[in-house]
Image (cartoon, rainbow, N blue to C red; front, top):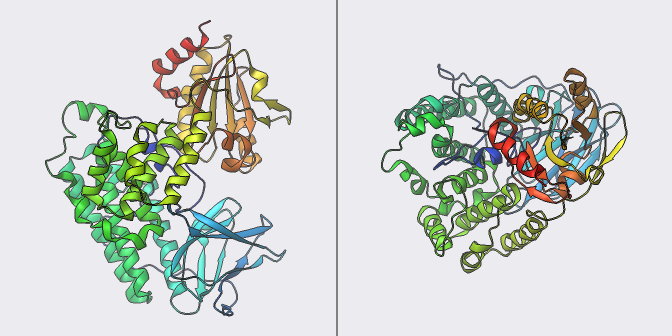
Length: 520
């Protein structure tokens, strides 16, 4: 099973490795959500404790605006931001920024919010999800570089309590993920029935943790309902992910067999009535997981055939109803197929047009299809120029005449680093031949990339470049990079041979692809 990463920071739609886990190319009937915020301790969880807050008292909002202010003990970037107003995919569409003073103080003001909403705080490559309600005045503090471990909130009313719960719940969940105590981490050795019991127990423990926190620190009623709902969505994503966690041997030997009616819990969630939750990360992640577990064909690919679109919409309607939640789920599925797999979805567009009622989804899908066609097999690879470790600028076009195996990666991306030993072995296998291994680092800090290169010396067949703009940089944008590691195979003539070639760790598969590319 292959994982990858979307962005560095805290919970945010597609944060960490969701997309590539879903798009790993397995013959799956289910796939996993990467960022579950769940507890797996063996003992009942204790009540959360609010960390000491070091900043000044909260300030009141003026004329209905929402104010987030605070203090940083050290200043590592000149500005801080809040992103809000999610689109149909749950992604923020507007951002406000504010300067951080030399003393570490800042003040961010949002226009009046129509309803409670999640917003994304961003500072120097780290992110946090905040819960804000109309008229909130919230103060926060954290240590840059250790945001997850140190962020704390104070303010009027229950806003600080809600955000301190989010911070500590996320931190505990992240620790569970790292310690492999979650049901997802154990799924590879469990039967489907055992996973269901583990997920049920885990959800109950997280509910108890929420109740204990709320007893000690009053929470807004709407926020508590949202968090209870989020636990249900994360539980459902765990169940959907079961088959994807199963090793090939278990699948082949029948140990991963799903019982009849295993997916009956999906319609029982009654997602068709949850339009208001579409602005939340948890429902968006669940719908993305649903699409790649329930709408793919048995081989994990886009359904094909003359009735493929009708079958897809019938399945989605049976599970999700015929409303907006279904339209978002199918839109997420198709759009991610284009953006991350570079799949040609045009055979399904007629049924999409006949069933989809959201013009914004249709607009975004049309744009993605046009972009995909420009990156299809046989098209010229988009050129870019980036610096190497010595500061010399290298253009992709300067490698014309050689086969290029292009790898977008970052030092903070564990799945990227997991591929590096196989990538080094692959370089040795093709040493002295017309293959260039081109690595483009998406680290926001060049120093992180340079330290990695010092610790892991490269070879003459490798070209190491740095993209300072990370996912928003020229190279990542040109290739539509949504997650990493992200690989491309480019021919001697500078044209794209494969937008989703085998990984270095596939061994014979990538060797065969490179040998074929080297043929005259």
